Image 1 (cartoon, rainbow over the protein chains, first blue to last red):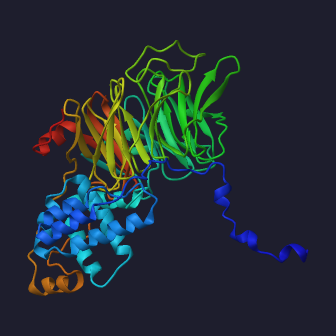
Image 2 (cartoon, rainbow over the protein chains, first blue to last red):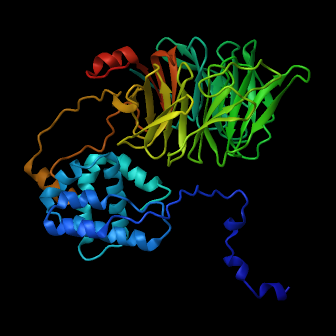
Image 3 (tube, one colour):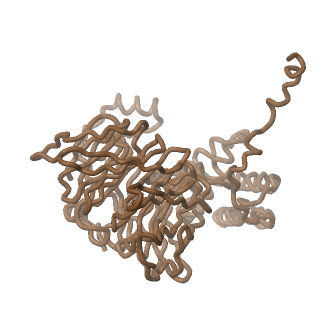
Length: 150
Length: 369
């Protein structure tokens, strides 16, 4: 008995990997999704066209890709755009988005909450309030139930 | 709108008899209680006690007056009325997880049970053996079946599942019926064939419903969306992302209008426009009582500002008729092509009856096409 109580490596085995009934999500081929165009967004911010920058940064979301770098870069870019808005302009910017845009914005907002930096949470909370009034609780539910997110 | 509170515990499921004088419901335990309408109230007439686990689905066949129940004890029972007593007959479903929902087919010669075993059991009565037998639909279901609905042709079955898909299967039993005529979902219908599978839904499919004609199927999913698919050469799926909490049950009340209800505790109307390929929110079907508005004192304003950073005082009381999530909706008068009354039961243990005509006149801009 002393022999087989020596090693406890078996405790670290992930049993779910060996379950033959394990649910595997469908592959959606997101290998060529590269996220929003950094150059385009940067130039729009410099020109002062913040509404355009918001529309541009919400294009091409890296939802299906498995590349974590692409996702991180997209999140940083979105945060840059969101921080450059004046508080009074946020509401107008959100109204200009369509339903899918509001859902995508919510996804980015919650992603931003996960890694807070200096002032990011305060800015994100302002955006969250406006996005909530546009998308309702449903948009938050969609962030929670999304199998693949930004 | 009539509301009757049966109890404080949730009503797990309910079913009405043919003339709507009796309702069978499960009060969140192992039994089924049958209530008879007496005047304006309800009195308990029978208690059906046989299940060893919570009863998760009840369906009452209007013509043959049989009740089928299924539960978490992995069994289903078919109850027949003998004299004044309901006698159960066990149906072996051959499942190793809980049963979740059950539905009689339109001709009442078979019923389907959805379960956590990732399969649907289609059961029919074999005369020679005097016994209910079942056939399984397994592929390609990957998770629990949460809801079922039959097509009017008695063969096609819509199933909503936890693997985020709504599918239409063929449940054709050659011992029972002749080959069905082609429908808009396809013409070859061997048993277990997948006639349609949805895509693009990201949440568990809680409720499914065929339209009156059977050419459309609607489903409500946990990602707060409602979708309608129109059968045809290549089925067209139209989805609506709603701004509310997820909806749990859905039913057609005309060919173009659906009523759905769920965690927001009120039924909502959705209108499907096939020409434009659009599904739109038609309105909230709940008439809240107007609460008396009291003026706020300056002290209250300051307190609100301090505690909640806002000056308005939102009452923490739900203004809807149901005080908790609505889990099931059933048609009371009329049918799926033209419904005049429907009923909802929920987790607050209450049952509400909604009159479509009254709702139409109470809310302006509400159009049921």
